[in-house]
Amino acid sequence: MHSFTEENYLKTIYYLAARQEGEVTTNSLAEMTATKAASVSDMLRKLAEKQLIHYKKYQGVRLTEEGERLALKVIRRHRIWEVFLAEKLGFGWDEVHEMAEELEHIRSEELVRKLDAFLGYPQFDPHGDPIPTPAGQMPTVEYTKLSEVTVGAEVQVMGVLEHSPEFLQHLDKTGLNLGCRVLVQDVNAFDKSVSVQINHQKTLFVSNEVARNLLVN
Amino acid sequence: MHSFTEENYLKTIYYLAARQEGEVTTNSLAEMTATKAASVSDMLRKLAEKQLIHYKKYQGVRLTEEGERLALKVIRRHRIWEVFLAEKLGFGWDEVHEMAEELEHIRSEELVRKLDAFLGYPQFDPHGDPIPTPAGQMPTVEYTKLSEVTVGAEVQVMGVLEHSPEFLQHLDKTGLNLGCRVLVQDVNAFDKSVSVQINHQKTLFVSNEVARNLLVN
DNA sequence: ATAAAAATTTAGACTAGTCTAAAAATTTTT
DNA sequence: AAAAATTTTTAGACTAGTCTAAATTTTTAT
Ligand SMILES: [Mn+2]
Ligand SMILES: [Mn+2]
Ligand SMILES: [Mn+2]
Ligand SMILES: [Mn+2]
Image (cartoon, rainbow over all chains, first blue to last red; front, side, top):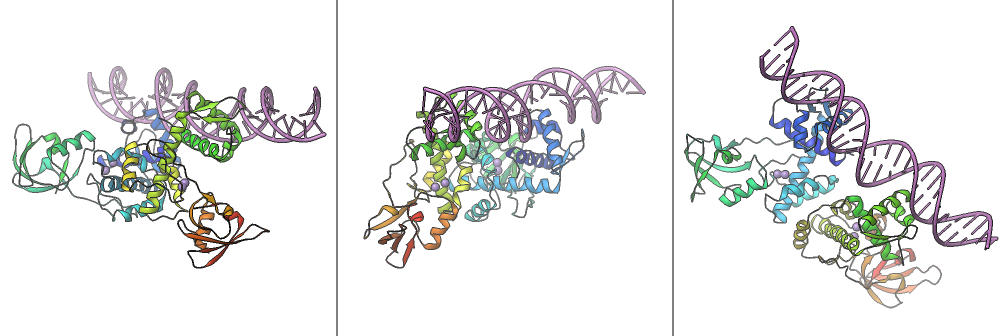
């Protein structure tokens, strides 16, 4: 069995590795887990002893196969619980993450299996993130950032790169929900903001900051 | 906020207080929480400092109003989660307790409220135990042990006093489920075992051990 | 190629929760 | 009412996870 803390470290290493090249650094882990570098160093030693990471002092860190398997299991649980909270209990996509951070550590294989079945084997969580398979594979998705779509193209909002409640609430307010159709009408050459038409109805100006965090197609 | 451990101690004190007269002892808590008396003593000092229990050294322990409020909140969460696991996910009543022991510590008022609504505001958990109200009241129920029912009476199984998977599985096997009708045909004067007819169909012999742990009417 | 800066690890300390062994208080027995 | 048995508390130690401060290693800049 592994502790909450270990599970959180593994998950965080997975996420950091996914968004950068090469090894994950101590400092980036400290920032993500809101702890200090000294605490991270300590934990890395322990995880390495348990063969969950490849770790050479001062050289950063990488998940072993077993470590990745565990990380994906935690991520799978997290995303399935998020679907439950949103679909069945009616929570907003801006509310589910925090609760899922706790629920993801409930230890029962059977619980996740049954919950998955109850939800109809969802493929994506409320933020459009793919749910790892029971076998421990992360489905690959090929989305583009809205900021990189060419003028004239019509695309569909498929996910978000930023998960903060503030960002998600902003999307709610402007109507940029998951699944909505977006026609790119114009890109401002100066600030890279985008002018879009949503669901063939109202026109909207989207800042580059927002467009960079919206996954489409 | 309170830790898992503190919540578990409060819950345990509540249960022990409910089934005995007077103060709850250190040893009984140690047995229930599967720890040692020394550890319990330590924790009692902490809970007393936080005003969650009344505690005079060597004199046993009693919940304060605030302590009882918290205990009932945990018990409410536990039982609501048990309903969810049984009703929605299809777990057996012998399987739900262990998972609920973890789920009861998920900290979100809103989650419990929404879950409660999703389940249709259940009054009882899968074992027939009443669910404390959102306001923090434990509903009173007046059930009798099957071992104390007079011959000739027809009663209904409403709950269990013993919650072990073994006991519950035994009831499943013999068909003594929650809600089933039981006609007491005879009581054996020697071993106090009971001969009953279930749902006006098959006749069954129930040991006194079992009858003492079945709540009826 | 050094020196300075930045990143990382180590050392030592703290908290929550647990343990064993010993001491103290309470209860039961004689 | 004293002795014996039982219960409870205290003392001291351990683990997981965290921290600050200091030491070490690596990277960057001169
Ligand atoms: Mn999330
Ligand atoms: Mn998500
Ligand atoms: Mn239970
Ligand atoms: Mn129950």
